[in-house]
Amino acid sequence: MDRARIVGGAVLRDVQDDDLPVMLRWRNHPRVRAASFETHEIGEDEHARWWATARSDAGKLVLIYDHEGAAAGVVTYAGLPSGTARWGFYLDLDGLERSGALLRAWIGLERAAIEHAFGPLGLSVLRGEVLAGNEPVRRLHRRFGFEEIGVYQRIVDGVPRDVVVIQLNRKEEA
Image 1 (cartoon, rainbow, N blue to C red):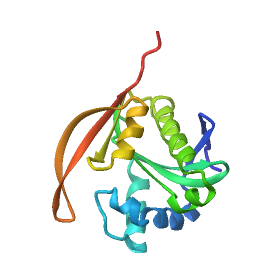
Image 2: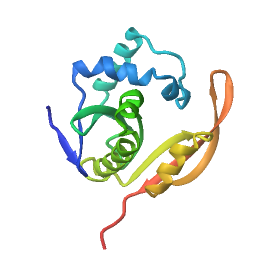
Image 3: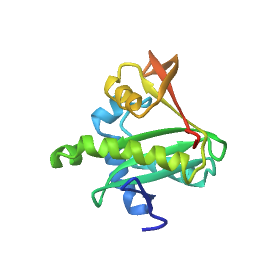
Image 4: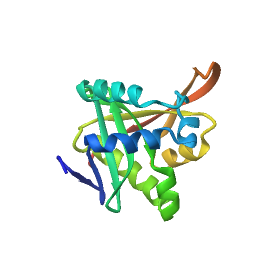
């Protein structure tokens, strides 16, 4: 494992080339696409182009989240190395539901992503965007201290959709 990162009992690690097919499968899951800004099914060529661009972009970091020893999700950061970055994630919904670990993995990924942002990445502010109708994800983010700081409209599949901007500030040590 290249540069494994142990964070809050979870592992965030660099993407390996053999992770790419499972990442694509997870990203193309109908429920993941429904919660995303780009909802079309992504083909292998498009995925390969995205990966080539992402890994050569110094302002972007893509990591695999390992849960209980198995790859279970993807965490992305954009806007690095500034003190403020945007993040996003998606999980292996089918595999985690089959094993009964979806909620634990979801919470573990969120915790690991936040700790990594404010620890090794040295961020002061972590931002994200969530479709307004995605109440489960909004609730989870609020549980971890994110504030909803704004709403804007974005065209998704030709339809204007409300998007909630979330933000979490690093807590200063007393």
